Each structure stands twice: as structure tokens, then as C-alpha cells.
Image (cartoon, rainbow, N blue to C red):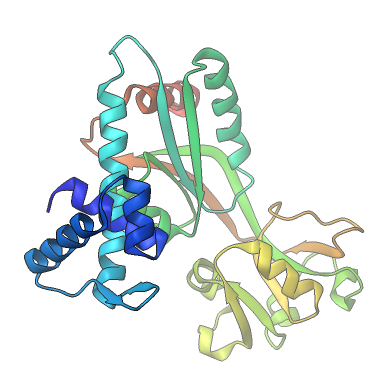
Length: 292
């Protein structure tokens, strides 16, 4: 496959028609059609279902679209990095993270770097541990921020001077709000809303397997789970400090007892040469927390 073929393919997927893609690419429609037919022959798959006015991707086409987006993105980023001289700190630093108040620490480093290196940009991606690790492995991000127990043996890691506390978000008018902390007996028979990470980390606290609990919903990011808590669907077991607990939000937070905490780790690929901008970020976090 040639890179231009992937770029043409992505344009067709975006525009939804050969004619629209040809116009966007400044190519003739017959030429673009021939090149896509050549691509299908090379791959020995059908990429498009061609209608009279609109084309749709086949299942194979959707898989190629995901990979092609990653490939084109990496090529573009590599070209941009190579055009930057060794003396110039510029470019983009990509950071993936789960939801954690410890992101405030990283935000301060970003603010410092923007002041020192005005040509550096940052791209943040939010996701659960599995999503962040997959992006780190594929080179789609430079650094991943991980919460709690995650296998990071394949990566270089740095522990952040932060620790998150597990607890429960619930409506402010809930009877359990009268308690300062929540114990197993308070929650074991209640409708629970858990994260995938919480399922594994909180099992020992509950002294029960997940199938013995009343789990009414699961989530990977807290924003939508908080909406379920406001609606009275259940009790959201999460880390403290991610959503606000004010009169306006209608939510409150109570920590678990005995306490359950989660360490925060930042990781990057071992033996991988970082861009000048990413290396400057790595040096700064090592200066700040390398001996913590």
C-alpha cells in the first residue's frame, strides 16, 4: 500500500462519495475510482458498498479506516518532527490519562513548558487504562497516566506524588449522606455503578465477587455516570475529586472505610526515541518527581 492510497481512501470515507472526494483531492473521478479498485485488488478485499448516490464502508473497509487513520497520523507527525532542528523545542506532546485529580500536577508542568517553549503544543486524550495503554503501545501518545494497579512492566515509569481515594458519589438527599464514611454493609445490597477498573480493585474491599453485587451499570468515564447518580439510578463508586459536589450538581461524596487508595503512575515506551518536545517534558517530570 502507498500512503497516498490510504489518504485517498480516508477522504472517500469522510466525504461519502467518490465525486466529493475527487473534488476535495483535485483528482478526476475516474482516476480516483481506478486507484481504489487497485487498492481493493492489492488487499484482495471489498472496501466499499457502492450505491447510486452514496458509498458505505464494508466491515473490512471500517477496519482499514481505523488503521489508515493511525498510519497517516504517525507519518504526518514523524515528518513534522524531522523538520524541526535539534536546537528547536517544538512540536506536539500527546498524553493519555484516566480521570484523576492528579492531572493537576501534569497541568502545572504543561503551563511551565508553554512559558519556556511557546512552540510546543499538547494533545490530551481521556480514556480508561486499557485504552490509554493501547494508544501508548501503538505510538499514538507519548505518555500515559495510569491510576491504581496496572501492569506497566514493559514501560519506563515514574510515580507521581499523588494518591487518589475511592468512595461513592450519590444524591445529596440520599440517607447515606448522613454518614461520614461508607462501609461494606452500607453498600453491599445497594444498586452500584462501577468502573471496569473499580471492579478489579474493589473486589477485596467488598469481600465478594462482582456477580454477588447489585451492579446496575458500568462506566469508563465518570461524567455520564454522575448523571445516573443524579437520577437516582444507583451509587457511583469512583475516585474522589473528579466531579464537583456542590448544591448545583446535586451530588455528594463519601469515602470508603477502611480506606482504599490508588497510586498514580506516568509511563512511556522503553527504548523509544522521543521527539524533542516529548523529551523536554520527560526531563521536566524527572526533575520534579524522579527522586520522589
